[in-house]
Amino acid sequence: MKKGCLIGLTIGAVALLFVLFIVLWGIRAYNNMVTMNEGVTSQWGNVETQYQRRSDLIPNFVNTVKGAANFEQQTLTQVIEARSKATSVKIDPSNLDEESIARFQQAQGEVSSALSRLMVVVEQYPDIKATQNFRDLQVELEGTENRIATERRKFNEVAMAYNAYIKRFPQSFIAGLGGFHPKGYFKAAEGADKAPEVKF
Image 1 (tube, rainbow, N blue to C red):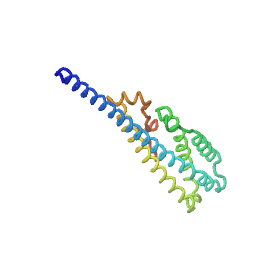
Image 2: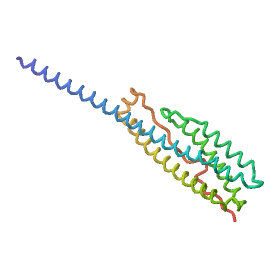
Image 3: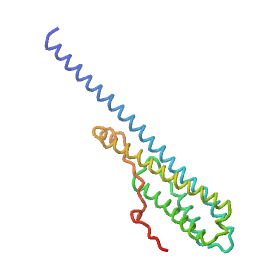
Image 4: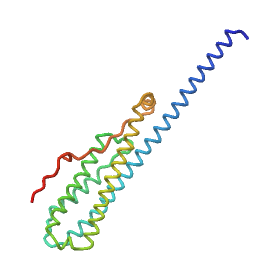
């Protein structure tokens, strides 16, 4: 075998190994993106589950409060309407962009706001606050709000890891070819950066 032919075979083998390495790396990167994307989708399911839990508690809460004579009907109506609107906002887990999450968060924020107003009004009705059923539901709602906050934080962490991975070079090339797009984040509610004013 001639020396030139041997060098050509060696260069060809090195080139083939290099191409094989790139292909294997691309497959691994793609599979990692699929796994991370599924992780984001799964965590989104956890967020939705906690919001659904809160939504399921609201009718019992409203019915408990409704039992009070002369309770302000407008406040109850606002809670019911906010719940209805929030449950109608459906987000496709494959399209968790900033706009979709903001729309979901706004609808859920209206529920939180309506529930807060309801709690303020309930303060004026000691008979309601004294019932065991009301206290149990209040504890359930508070616990659910904590679970929501935890799951939203976890979602942001998983989405951040996914986004960072697909944006890094050279994974960004595979992400573009595979149709992987950045996910949105939950953000603090507008005005959350200002401390509430306390009046006595």
